[in-house]
View 1 (cartoon, rainbow, N blue to C red):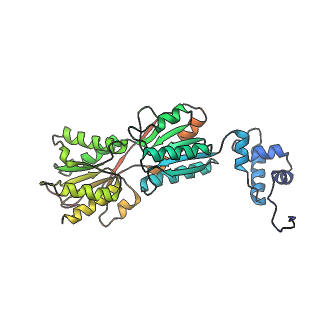
View 2 (view 1 turned 90 degrees about the vertical axis):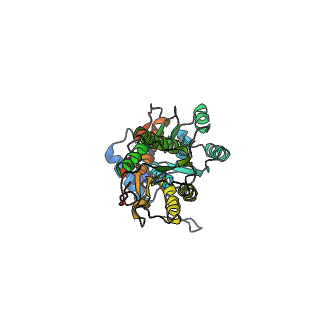
View 3 (view 1 turned 180 degrees about the horizontal axis):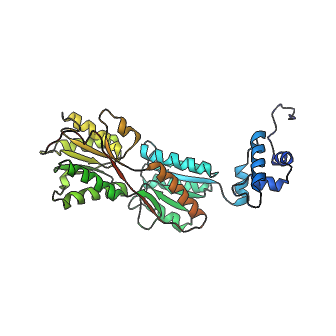
Length: 342
């Protein structure tokens, strides 16, 4: 290929691809687009193979100017150090890439002021839609996006009246309670997470109502609110272990919280899984590999992320959408399967 005097290789143009494929430039352009309507499958395959072989790179920004889209999706998360949300984001990014989109992710720290700044920054880039992973009661972000006509979808957490993809967290709390009841536990504690987030609120509610229906209500003093972090789990777990009659089992509404609770049980001089049982939530990859493998409620986080992107694409395309609830699954392991006897 000829080179300019600077020695730099000229980028391959669409005209070059069309010439090699022996088609009109407009045909080559349609064949390389996300919707190659009006072009035969053989031609699409030939043009794309030649484009790849020649090293042609489509100018997505220019395509966006022509189509009125940026081919970018924003993703809001409280913090990417949360392994559950990191897993969700990874699947969103993969689904977006396969659809010819890019993603922009931002940490909001579950703070309204930070959230507004991040949303404004995303909108200034002309993104096509936003996936919200940090929704909570009192948050107005979803309402404001709706009023501004910005396509959006909630993931992991849900709010009434807004499209979302989540696990059935109330049912997940029930599964944790049923398992501990079957194992003979009657005096139990809950590290409940943030009650303004649907994940903390609904998991806790499902758990407490199941114990109440069985005739063993969980007293308020045995329910400790917390952040969704390991350090918060340590402090909340210590509070439960320091009760006059500490619980024989604890439900932590997030696996990261459960890790901290493990430390509290250790510090109390008790044996995890035999003297004190523990159930987490989300079944992160680390749950099965801990020295004492963690019983957890499994959420299909990867599927959740992919479905949230699909739902957002339907919203962007003006199609009707409905919220999705994925089924949770109890995964029993050593932290509840010891030889506890009531």
